[in-house]
Image 1 (cartoon, helix red, strand yellow):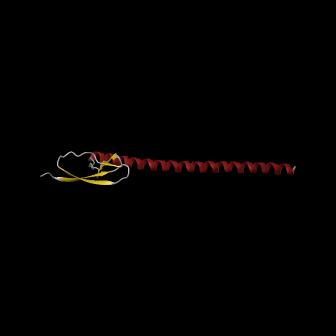
Image 2 (tube, rainbow, N blue to C red):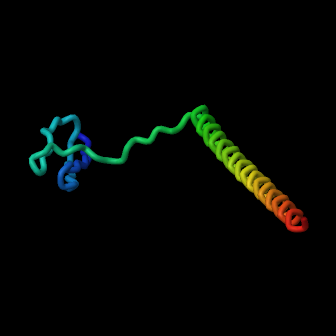
Image 3 (cartoon, one colour):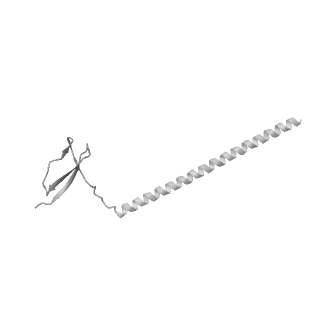
Length: 110
């Protein structure tokens, strides 16, 4: 007596699931639904990760984290530099205004 197994098919058009019972090595014709051949569905086989792959994945994650940290530090430094430049420009403008005021004050006294 052959062992029975249930194979599940899914229609590509309507998404209907069809259960078919198979016995042993008996070849059955393709299952059709909505005029299209249905595809066999089921849980995908999971392959365990090799230790080397796990280490590589961890290393990549660590590197991404480090890159993120560096980008954040660079962004902060650029922001600080821009602020310093603005401050310097503002100082120059006020110094110019003061110089102009002094000149006009001297001219008025004469």
